[in-house]
Image 1 (cartoon, one colour):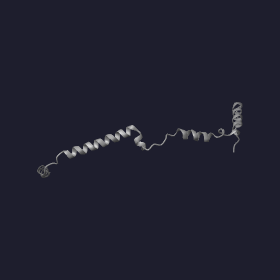
Image 2 (cartoon, rainbow, N blue to C red):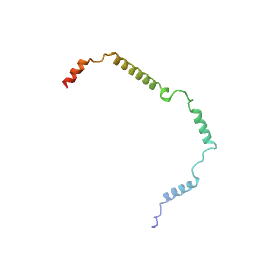
Image 3 (cartoon, rainbow, N blue to C red):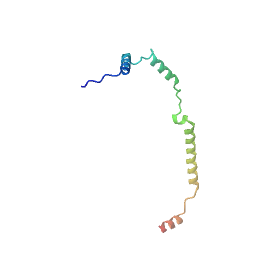
Image 4 (spheres, helix red, strand yellow):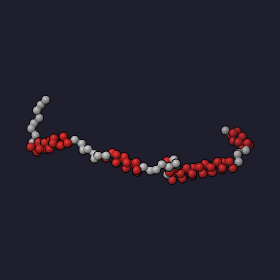
Length: 96
């Protein structure tokens, strides 16, 4: 391994400062930090409800209601329209 060239005085000063910081290690959290954090997160959680998650949001509930009404209206309209007569369906089949 080749020897490294000597560093300028400024670089040596910075290298010495950085080496002095290495033994410090990572900072330790204050005592019971994670216990306090967990308690705060538990207190922040919303109370559980009996409704499903998608029904708690009004946009999903309104969309579901509109979809049910649209399908109901489509079914009612399709049942009220009279089915095509057999003569018109046979003439259409004869053309093809």
